[in-house]
Length: 562
Image (cartoon, rainbow, N blue to C red):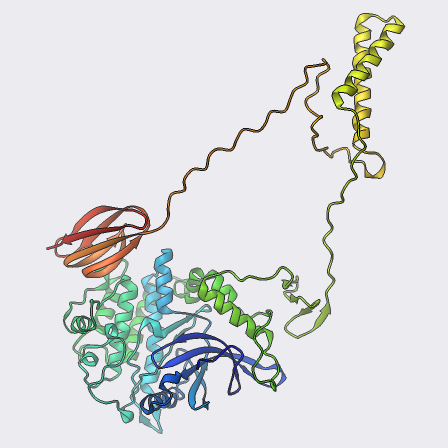
């Protein structure tokens, strides 16, 4: 049965499940110790369906024995190995980041470039870790350890720029030989000798790393086919093109390094990972213009800005308590990792209650209990200021309509002028002055008086009777109803369509000037946004055409390039 959040496994509290492989399950957990000590780890446990299989158990134990000897900056560290409920588990270093495969996929989706110098730097880091593993010895006797599964999925990149090789689950040491003729690993990254089931040595890992770097430089698959048998045949027979053929930004020196790592004749290949590391280091030193050109962390944060920010350790809300009542509740920052990873995998923004927490000017996080917590666990009372709503003004007393009031003022002014026998011009001016003064007084009364009266710059909201003024009775302007809103225009659909493309015999496919598949053989489907796209096929006889993609529709094309 799979472990649930809050379950105790040894001295670790399970936070959440991360993944499930062929024979093992992967969990994020927290190692706890005295005085609030805590460290995030990854738990790798044999799946319950294989827990009773002696061969799987033996393989898992062998992995633990081998990997526990590895201690290098470019290799994921093993922290613990123990048994729990009739099965074994490994506790490993938790790398806050993504696999190289995920990062490369995101870079293609966002059109973020992966410069050749950065690819060379990544290869240099992986080769350094492999060189250390290949040199590992036991009491002065070389173990001749071979990883045998060097792929983009097994290279982890942290948001801080660390490059680490993981998953030595099928690693082989010479004194613990695996049965001859057994194929283990991913076929597309196997060396020719490994695909034939022959004896492997460190040069097998050199070839696999060469395949990985070739694919990073070209954004395509080197050995691809519709079946596993086809992939194995391609590993043995397919011509390996120089990366610069598909990516003009790759220079000749990097071409030579990659092609030598991919030599099918092991005697012509780099004889050790250390040789490959030095060759890639020379490329980096010659082509890098500044340290920024090899900043893996900056590249990762550009690809995953939200995830990188969320991965920073922080105080959060709560998590499921351990199921053992004798243990204390799990500290809050483990919950932050649990919820952050769940939201990160779903690609969602964190949903935080408005009163859950806030960050003070000093950087502390204020929890919803009225206390602020910083790194030293210093508690300070928090003053909560209630939000002041706008005061509701009392409704003013009823007053006659404004037009009626104007008529009253005008009549009184005419009566006064007529009783005092003044000239016509003076009388007209007096009428206007009398009306203006009276109107100002009327409006002031309607706006209120005393402390609550509006300031000189304040503006009174319009009332139905405060329409445009006109001193001539019966000609007041009326409010016209607002024009009806324009009808809603239909929104164009943004659902993608599909191009089903068959290329005979083969070719490199470019869509809108970008490489979509380095070696297209047979039929492949491409999911594209609606609109017109330009498709180029570079093969024995280049071809180019435009295709109209409609939402949720499938467009079929068949092209011969020979």
